[in-house]
Image (cartoon, rainbow, N blue to C red; front, side, top):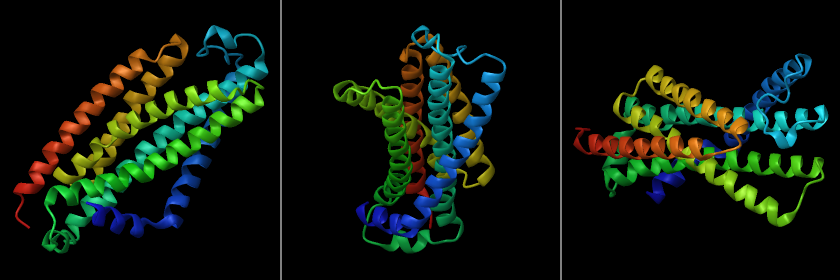
Length: 238
């Protein structure tokens, strides 16, 4: 598993990972700016915010920007997972590179989970890094930075990020079983619609319980799906 992880991580390289990060960050920022400007123009900045942020339009604008920025970064990372599943898993089979990997002295389970580990690692680093920096900047800008409070909030948000990453790894199972780009990307888009809508609903309700429950359920489905995909891989003739 470690050999597969290193192999595909080296293939992606720092340059590609940096490019993924830049594309996701710039796209999320552009879309967020458009949405926040529209909300400000229609005087609806406080619609999805909890009561604690009702009042100052400036504060509402900053908080809205942070909320939508992280939301679209999560969406971009989930879409990236589908792309990586296509590139790393599906393409390996389509291009018959799997023959060389299967000939190596390692189990098929290690090959498959090594691929998943690379996808989860790359997307996890991008999401958690941008989320951590974003949270630090908003706390500093709003002059509410307290180290202990920041660490607790960061741990909570990172835990949710890990669930987002784990749930959307279901695209890897689709890449293993079906191996068609349309199905893989459609799976990622479907998960984005479900999970991001739940995230928006959690902001206005001031509670993450429903979002947490949906994330746990989808994560369990993702784990079962990948277990099934691994069993499917074991039975394939290569």
